Amino acid sequence: MSQPLPRLRANLDFMPSPVPEQPGLLIRDPFHYSDVTLIFPPPLVECLALFDGEQTGLDLRAALVRITGDFQVGDLEASLIDSLDRSGFLENETFEGLREVRHKEFAAAPTREAAHAGSAYPGERGELVETMRAYMEPDEPEAAPSTGSGDIFAIAAPHVSPEGGWQSYQAAYRAMPKEADGLTFVVLGTSHYGAPERFGLTRKQFVTPFGETPVDQPLTDYLMKHASPAIVMEDYCHAVEHSIEFQVLFLQHLYGPSIRILPILCGSYARSIYEGGMPEDDEYVRRFLGTLGDLSAREGSRLFWVLGIDMAHMGRRYGDPFSAEAERGEMLSVSARDRERIDRINRADHTGFWDRVQENHDDLKWCGSSPLYTFLKAAPRGRGNLVRYEQWNIDGESVVSFAGIAFSRDA
Image 1 (cartoon, rainbow, N blue to C red):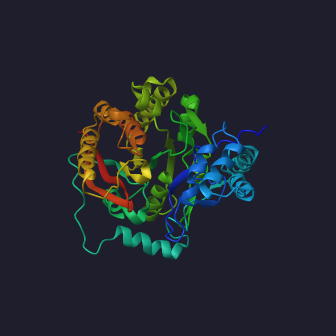
Image 2 (tube, helix red, strand yellow; image 1 turned 120 degrees about the horizontal axis):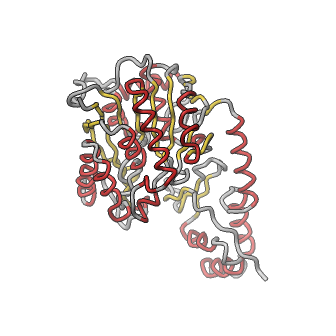
Image 3 (cartoon, rainbow, N blue to C red; image 1 turned 90 degrees about the vertical axis):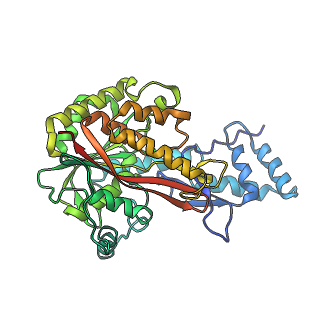
């Protein structure tokens, strides 16, 4: 009797092939357990649904016969299964072995190496210096953003590729203080791949072509002491996550690598979005938010908060039945809804903000809701000012929105 096919991993990235001469579905591993990228040609894409742990090799063979019109599909069947297996894309022993190796490597490593140097930004220091200068130093000097009364103590910047979002990065980071002496930068990033109601920490120094930036160990110890059940310590997600790496890059550009950071990956609060209630209805989330709030009150002006967030993800790449174009058509109503949420953020109205996130189970697919909510709960006296809002076509049919926001303390 034919055995069930192993399940295709649900945590892979799937997107239309960006290679015109190779149309189809691109599959890659965002966890970098595997460095392989596969492109499935359009006729074979439907076969992926058969890798569900229930259907068998006989079902796959029947599908291939129907697709090709040829009864001699044994080699194609074997090649398809072998490609997915060797790539680590199936839930089987091959994948488990790859995952174990990567997790052990990260746990043993003394530093958190730059995962996106050479792809999302230059991997060579000299070229990176010039690139960052181009992003941060416009041809025409602009006035610093107006943020109302009080000192700026936090910003929210994108975590989209700097090449696409540099103007919003620039708007946010130009609101930063001129000096960083005595500050610890609390960097709240979206955990794209971590547990929904957990927070990822690491003690490892963050490395980029600019140098190594240390983590504030006493503050990490404090969080671990008072909120350890909510924390994944040495979270492997840090090894591959860009939402914090990009913020560290901009901070290093402004101040050099010898700053201190407290990097925190925030899970998605999916239970609240899909089942109702507030994020802190979860005991572990409540404990972490309370501990972070206590830390905020204790440290006061010694902390500067940096949020790495994107907003709406719309269009075919993100599962919508329509093609999205920045600031046109459907994206005009998305802009209005984005701005409603931003208005609640700027008023420090965490309840009103989360009410809007929960609408239609967050059909805008914001990729930054949890760091924003975490910040609003931990630093409730902040008042925000939108310094830039953008929509960007990440491909021809899909749009990401993001913004720069500067926060000042209430008098």
